[in-house]
Image (cartoon, rainbow, N blue to C red; front, side, top):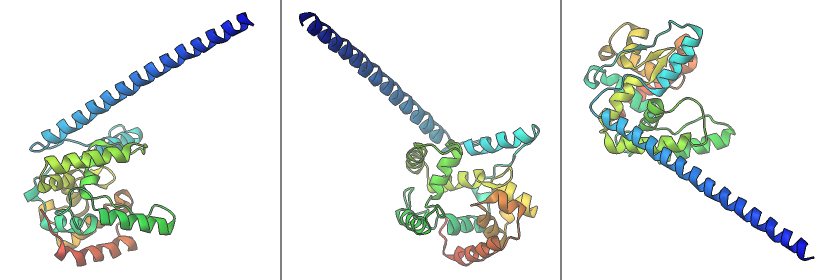
Length: 249
């Protein structure tokens, strides 16, 4: 009996030592992950600060698209040319505000009413048919996040959006957005889009042209191939009717 009890106690001690080691390494791993997360956030914040008055040459999304294109054609290149805010037509600015984020100049990164409406619409349809992302949120995704969906991606988008809103003026956020969003297969930014579709500069875009470009934003590669799609033309007319009420920074 005594020998059996001794073995029992020894087994308990071995399990206790094993659990202690498990907790020790678990906490070390969690601490390491936390430090890595902080370092990543510091890296993002440093980039946002750098881009306050310097232009990003590319974005995470642009790089993703280039990689996909070069898998099919190693010589593929993106169409992209940076232009300053004042060299982009106010028609395009108003069209994008009317189409993508009517409250852009007033909110602090998130349109809570728009998010609620999108949630209710998706719930009613039983699938994802609407999004409530603001221009600031879209820029956060384009600049830093890959196109792959991960459990923490939305949380990271929120953090980056807060950084953008607190470190940059609205005009600067919008300027970068106008220069990095996708407008076709390998087409990025307002200048490349204006030349790709109309063979003019971004400064020369008419209200009709600007409204059509804004209507393309949710599905640019599809509309690049289907430029006279009924849905695109219908949305263009809706945006045109709303442009007069759009406030731009």
